[in-house]
Image (cartoon, rainbow, N blue to C red; front, side, top):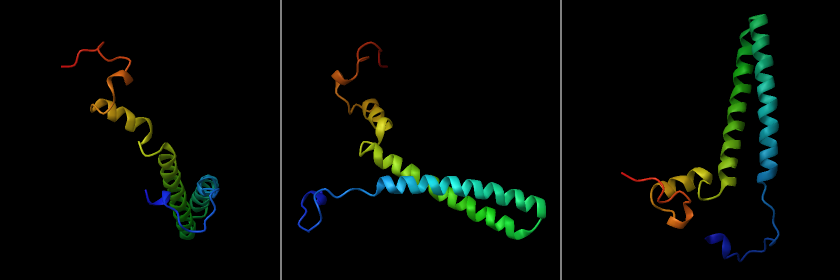
Length: 109
């Protein structure tokens, strides 16, 4: 991978910003959901169109934050895709026979 051959002056102990990004996404998700609920209630009580637009914007921010959290979760799971990727690999013959404790106990058609 190209990151292994570093020739620049970046520090060896550089830290990933993913933790801060995850914290900020959680904050954005919570605030946006609360705002969307508030603006929706305000729109229903007053009937003014501006509150509907505010609720839509807050809901869009909540969706973006939720998608970002999903991306971060997948990235944290690693290149194998987490548990699902390992299961698919075993289902398609990618795993070693000694890796599967049930190997030989279930007849395959």
